[in-house]
Amino acid sequence: MSVYQINKLLYRTDNDPDFRRRILADPAAVLDEFALTAEEREALTAGAVGKLYQMGVHTFLLNHLYRYELFGVNRDNYLARIREGMPYDPRFEQGNLPVQRFVK
Image (cartoon, rainbow, N blue to C red; front, side, top):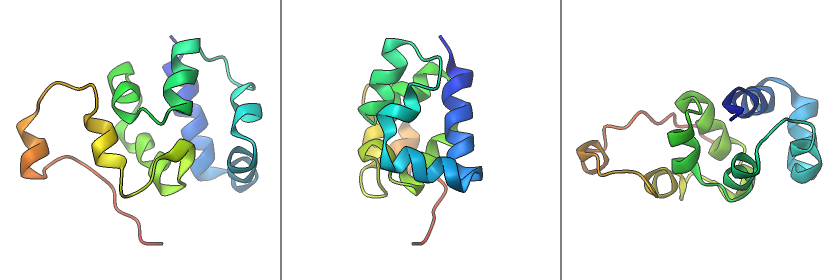
């Protein structure tokens, strides 16, 4: 597993405007630049936030998926997607999960 590669991809998306433009324009080509397993690539392209979280992707970096609306993830579906495939956690109902909010 290459969780480091996913973390690096998300970090660069936030910190490198040229990279961000490229991933928004042609995500498949950009993913080819990273040493990802088939499972990781599928989780990214499906916008499977919960699966990425379970794989060990840093929670702060996961927020960049919805901040830049990557792979179909946006503000409206981020919480639902992070819950998918995860065991029940009472913090979901209490609204106490760490989620970074950005205003467009």
